[in-house]
Length: 283
Ligand SMILES: [Zn+2]
Image (cartoon, rainbow, N blue to C red; front, side, top):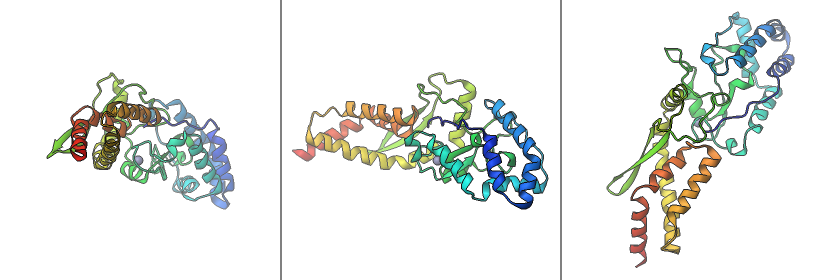
C-alpha cells in the first residue's frame, strides 16, 4: 500500500470537457450547475486532510442524474481521464490494487461516494484505481456513525513510509505453517491516521484476505528455498529472504502484506525445518 500521485491538471477543465460532449437537456443542466460543482471542488481541495467535514450540495433529481451521467455514461473524455490517472502512477501500481495489495485494479472507486455526492462523480482527486473486490466491500459506507472516515484516501492521507504496523505471526499446525496478520501501532504512527488504517483493514477484510492468500505465497517460498538449499547446503537463505523483503517494501510500501509474511516466515523455525528436510532428501 502506497500513496497515489494526483493529477495536477485543473479538475474544472476535465468537468467542462466531459460536460461539453453531452447533448440536449443534460448539457444545459450541467452548464447551469457548474458553479455549484466548482465550489465543491474547491471545498474538497481545502478539506483534503479532513474530508469527513465535507457537506454534500443539494441538487434536483434531474441535476443529480446529469452529474451521475458524466461518470456512468462512458465517453472518450472520461476514458482519457481514467487513463491519465493510471499513467500518473508508478508502473507497479498498474497491476496491484493499492487498497489491498492483492488484486488487479480493474475499477475506480469514488472515495467519497457519488451516490451521496453526485457533484464529485468525475473529480480526479476522488477517483482511486482499485480492484472490484475492494470497491464492492467499500460500497458507499465511507463515514462511520461518529463521522470518522473508514478508509484511507490514498492521494491525501500520507502513509507512513518507514513505520511498520502490519505484522505476521506464523503458527505451526502439524508442521504446516499458518499465517495470521495483525495491525499494531508499535512505531508511533499518528493516532488519527492509525485509526483510519485500522478501520480500512477491518472494512476491507484485509487480514483474512491476506491469510487466505498466504498459503500460495508460503508454498512458493518453500519451493524456492528448497531449490537454493539443494544447490548449496550453506546457501544464505536468511540473507536472500531479507533482501527480498527489502525489495518488496521498496516497491510496494513498508506495510505490503507479502513482505510482512516473508518476515514472519524468516523469524521462526520455518527455514530451519526446510533445511533439515532438504538434508534428509539429499542423503
Ligand atoms: Zn483491492
